[in-house]
Length: 362
Image (tube, rainbow, N blue to C red; front, top):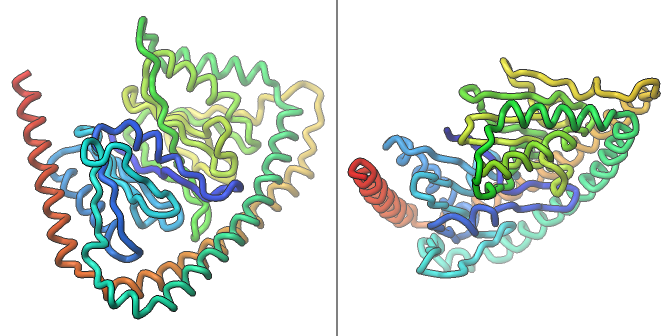
């Protein structure tokens, strides 16, 4: 089963990448280099579409600053990752040629044309940087307000009830496997603050879904223990973190081997899932404790306003980046890019055909 996700997000700490969990573990890594507008995302989209036409599962890695673009494509059947290796998630090879390949689309541009527009390129790049700086200022403020909300919620939550609920979820959903090696964790984001506002990915209509309704930021008390149980049972877990708390407990868990997802909804991120079993964490309160609903409403409204301001700055950065791409595009020989893309697709088809033939004989 395939699904889309992010491997980086705009957060109160700035841009936080999580590419390393895949780049360090994929058997084959193709690092794509090149400038804005030279066809990196389009190349990966074409590769993904070709692989799907052969019946191969594909995981698309979206760009949180422009969700219509791709930052990467992972092909589990071949354990192969194509990834944009340029800023803000610069990736360099550790074993060049042996494990990683460099795919340089910069070979397809006219250096002279770009040098002639150097002043415009540098000016736009500085404006983009300033727009991101403004976005991160608002995001830092948003992170502080979110932490205040979470601390307030923790004071009234019944921690023992939350932990018991986590144990029941793990017991009912994660089969024990005796002697299994510890499972791997791949850190991702299913949610992002984008130029168009908050966005939650994940079409899990064909999966079994358990939904945690959590408007107060308590779900980590449940997802953390469930993640530990899944790892102990030897399962690979995609741990999807909260963009506003990127180093905290995950917001969602995806376990492909079990075709099961633990999703959080009700907060600033995370949409409700039709047909999911819903568990209401907001009802797991200590007896006789004032929950101060008026203050919570004020903080929630402040969060929404700060998200709007952050999104506005990200939108400005995207508009400027679109202008930067427009400067680069006329200098790119897209026929040369197309030849390189077809070469990659041919190699993948050969590898997939060989693997399919070998599996039929084994």
